[in-house]
Length: 392
Image 1 (cartoon, rainbow, N blue to C red):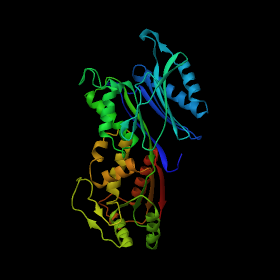
Image 2 (spheres, rainbow, N blue to C red; image 1 turned 90 degrees about the vertical axis):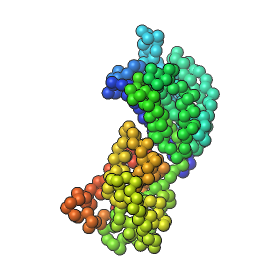
Image 3 (spheres, rainbow, N blue to C red; image 1 turned 180 degrees about the horizontal axis):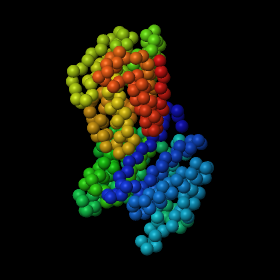
């Protein structure tokens, strides 16, 4: 696969009302041989038992594929090992969907009793031709196609298509309606996590906040790499200002400056004034500024601390997505650039002690700034980003 492309995965789940554990389990495989696989397993029932069954199913599939077994062998072994509930009409103890990418070019989909995955190309559904294969006596639906830049594949548990039954809809949210919903909202800038969030959040609304079943969506998409660079604080030695900023601006992609003192040294380096804004988009976040040649100029620690909080939420329930995705305060704009738009992120961190932070009324220091940057870097890595941090 071209080094300028990257596979991005993301998922979101809702627990059935009253359950502490989700009966669905999603696992992503990124093997050393280049194989990529996204597995969504749905355990029979709900709660602890379903969670164990779905975790077992997805782990078996990923472990076998990572060990070099073909997808057919892995599915065959899993299908043979999964018992059925004979008292419930021979229903399998776990259903599953496997989205497998080989050589970065071909996608194979294996689906066992889950809703058929939704494949979007250019924001519209790509209708795949499925064939049925009997593997260990179980009917497995299989489809294969080439994958192109921008393609997005979404696996669903049946909690999605049953959303709203007994609450807001008579017959649930059909797969066709989910397709229409995604096609209507599609934007190529959406991350895999946020595409899954759009579906699951809508399901939650249809369930009136009381899901009648475990509900999950897992997304895999092929996108171009996108670089974002963040400079925070002045270097320890004043003579290193130019060195740090030369390296910063030598990087392609978008450029963000965080901190008032940082904005001043960037302004001096570019020979362009800082143009402050007095508009508070969020009363808790200082206004942004503008410098010609910069994509975004924000305040420092307060803004970054909010970004860190948003990163925590993004890696979890992602409930705040519908706030930061549309707001224009500095923290929300950084979140959109880093979480959704960027795949590669470089931090340039100046280690000088900021005199403005020495006022004892404010509990801000160089250690706090470093901790925020390091923790944010770890959370961005957990999102699948390439992250580098350089100190000056």
